Each structure stands twice: as C-alpha cells, then as structure tokens.
Length: 115
Length: 109
Image (tube, rainbow over all chains, first blue to last red):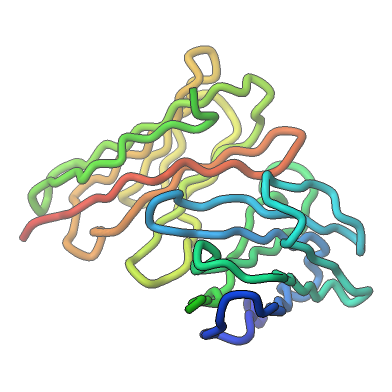
C-alpha cells in the first residue's frame, strides 16, 4: 500500500507570491490534516479535511487555505507569501474513526523557502 | 499553560540505558494518545498508541498513561544510538490532533 505522497518536495518562492502544495493520502483514508513545522514553533496544526469538508482549523491567517477533492486528495494554498512562512509543511492522513483509526500517517513533507 | 507539554531536552542517555520521556496535557477530554519519532530532516513516524490507563509494551518501547494525573510517558529500554531523534507526544479528543513540541533524545555509544 502506498504511503502519503506530498508534492513538490522542495519549493523556493519570493515574498508576495502564492504557492499550492499537494497531498495524496493512503488509499482508503478520508481524513487529511496539514501541519506547519518550524524549529521554533514545533508542529502547528493548520486544518483537517474529511469527505471534502474542513472539519477543524488551526490558528493561522486567512492566507492559508485548503481543499479536499472527492478522491480524498488535498491541496493547501498560501497566498501573499511572507518570510515567516518558510517551513516544512506536513500532510497526514488517517481513517478518522475511533481509537487506532485516528493514527495519522505523515508524508515526507514539502520544504518551502520564501526569499 | 500549553495543551501538550514536553521537556524539550536534550535528553542524553548512554547506550543500553533506559530513556524516559514524559508528556503532560491539559484537555481532560483527550481520548487517544500517541508517541511519534522524528529523525532530523524526516517526517514523524508512529512509535506507540495508547488509550487505556496503564502500560502498553511493544518491543523495547513501553507507553504509560495516567488520565487522572493527565500524563503519558514513553520508556525506551536498552537504548540504541539509532534511537537518537525527537520524540513527539500527541493526543486527540473531539477536535484535532494536538502535538507537543517534542523532546530531543541523544543516545551516546
């Protein structure tokens, strides 16, 4: 079974640009969560999608948005990039049920550098 | 108070020793608890999952959960240099998954 796939692995953008990151979950997983990881802040929750609906949202500005498609693939968009958006963006998928079904499996991440 | 608190470390133990990692949390509604290991430059990978009070063992790893005291711990027996990584405590209740900042563990040969 293929794991969680994130593309691209690396991105370099300049301030003010926008970026779209993609995540393909494990087959059968309907929940996709996005996280931002920086050395100073650790793993920060962005949002969770389940069956094409945003189920939970973290404390990030509206420049960060996402969506989920009917095949459970998800995209995350960041508009008007700022230097502080430089981070590793991780996607995780799960079955999103009870107990062990909440185990999240992470992709390799997309490392975004904003110059 | 942070929702999930971990000692950031670094925690250093000699090879073969027991490494003890601790995590406290504030949300009494938390139902499931997870320990992830993250090597430098890599994504987190699940080590242990626990949801009942008490101990759960898997090989060299033991997770301990005490809901009354709101803490969860991870013991690594016979620590190896390959265990050197950052260990993330995570929990889930009705809302999203919450992660601690992680404890960096170094196992010295």
